[in-house]
Length: 277
Image (cartoon, rainbow, N blue to C red; front, side, top):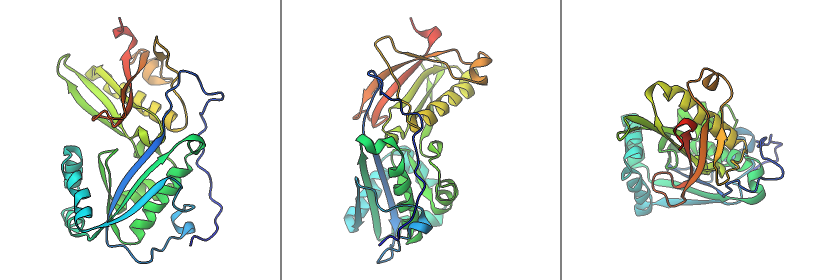
C-alpha cells in the first residue's frame, strides 16, 4: 500500500471559463510499455516516486511470453519507433529483447479529470516506480520514443513537473511539392488536445515555426482550448519570432480524426495568413 502523502497538484492554468463553444474537446489517452523483470511485490513508495497511486482510468497489465513479444514486435514494425530503439545502447537493446516481462499501461481520462494534470503526475510516478523495481526501458508510441532509465530520471522524475516539451515530439519532413518543410507533432493526445500540422514552412522560417509549435504545445498542455470557427482562428505568437517578421500571423483550422495514422489524433492545420486565399 501507498503511505499517505501530500502531493502538489499539477494545475492547468489556462482552461477558459466558460469553455468556448467552438473549442475542440476530447479525452486524453496515455499508452506506455516498460520491459524488464519486475520485483514481486512492487515497492511503490509515494514519497520516493512522487505519485498518489495508479490513477483511475489507467489499465495496467503484466505481459509475458508471446503477449510481451507481440508488444515488442508491434514497436519494431513502426519505423520511427524502430529507429528510436536502435539509438539505445546495444547492451540495453539486448536487455529489452531478453526481458521476460512487459508492463503495459493504457489510460483514458476525460471530464473533470482534465482540469489538472494529476493523472499525468501519477502515471509518471508509477513509471518511475517501475524503473525502480526492475524496468530497463520504456517505449512511448505516441511520441515515437524509447526511454532509458537515466533519460527518464533526468527529464521526468527529477524535475517532477509537467514539462510537456519532453512528452510531445515535433517532427520535420520535406514538403517536396513546394520545396518547403512540414512540421508536425505527436503526443498532444496525452493532454486531451489536438496535434499540430504546419505545412509549407520555408527553411529560413524553421526556427520561428518550431518556436510557435513549442509555444502552442505548452499553452495547450496547460489547458488552453483553440476556439476555432468556420473562418479559422488567427494566432500571432508573442515575442521575437513574430516581432522580427520571420513568422507572420497564422490561421488554424481543425482537421483529421482519432483514426488518422499519422497523428493517431485530431490535429490543427496551421497556415501562414499570407498564404490563405
